[in-house]
Length: 591
Image (cartoon, rainbow, N blue to C red):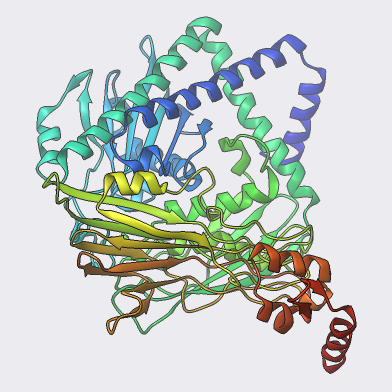
């Protein structure tokens, strides 16, 4: 839509019928409520904690053109990636071959926007004989007979990465296809859980389908179509309004992925150039390294999804997402590069996608110092265990994500120990759940002192968790930002990076990042998530705030002196103002 067209729509809304405006709002909120009901249905019926605890899913309601109308909180990049996947699914099948009662499974990465274990389930929505839209739910399945149980870190082809479902119909005109179900059951190590999660997704989609049909029945098909268009147009208007207030120009930044899991001594560059104009927000990945041998290559759909997440955070963070929000966004990703992988490139370890929103912010930081924070812990720190349960004799497989510190910003300190910004709506797995589901004992879970980047506004601290295996199994950890530290802004200091320690205190102790390694009963894994970068010179931080940070355990006495120039009398736990002033003046003078 052009700017002139957008202005005409604003005038139309201002001069139009108030009753029609109210009806649009009612329909929009009904759709949002239906999406939330889909989410509740999914969580109540799913078999795996990665869905009902961690919320590793993305779901929504779409119109006939596969444009998002309403979503429910989950993994944000899934929901936006579903748009791309739905369009590819319709293109592959042909709309004329999609019928009422069909339920379709789809996980071909280059089209589905994620790796093979992120399976999209979708059902078309018909009203009478007319197709009016789709419901879609993508969720992480824990196994589809991929090369390694749990997670693949060193595959070199899509054909090592599990069963591919190229828009297969598990239901055809309302009739379940047992052959498709058998294909899935005999291509997984945990058939009961995989089929159980699939059924939960099917039920979720049917819930949304039914609610939209009830909505159309109540208001009429024409009113539904009109309201859907206005929802999208309004989403575009508010995005463009915010875009107009952003600084205009072009800025670039780059960051590094540890390795591709195969060539472990070779770091991988992601380069982003962001251009903001009156009409567009352009994210250009030209200059990013070519696709690599290992499984960290990204399908274009997920690249667009994480770029959309950053754009929404800058423009419309306080409104529910819909397709209109993203009309001003344009993504340029050279074909065959790391961020636009082509068949048969391995795509299982999609962690570079988690880095991208941070790199977009890094590019924009010089132009938007009051908006953009320093780097967070840098990525999602994922820990997974897999093995044979000593009590049940069945395969156990549990995972969780660790909480990182967020970057300091112009308005204050970064938040301590929350989920990475690439997964708003997600959570970690509680200790009680992990210990109940798996032969694990969590011996420690605490904030990681001094992981935060020092600054006038310091970064947040990350979390450390200590896992003891009480039966033999394999530890699978997924980290791809351990060799570079979370960056700072405005003379702040970088934060501590993520890391994993295997078998601490033994002669087999290893400091590592991504790993898939057997652990014996009694052996320990320590996961430490990174902190957020600092904002501003730490010598300008209030000494009283530094003292409180020390009291709270976020900052050590050594860091208080070394990084902030604050001397604390440990006898009285008060600030030695004279010594602090002398030390700070000397350091500022030296600079």
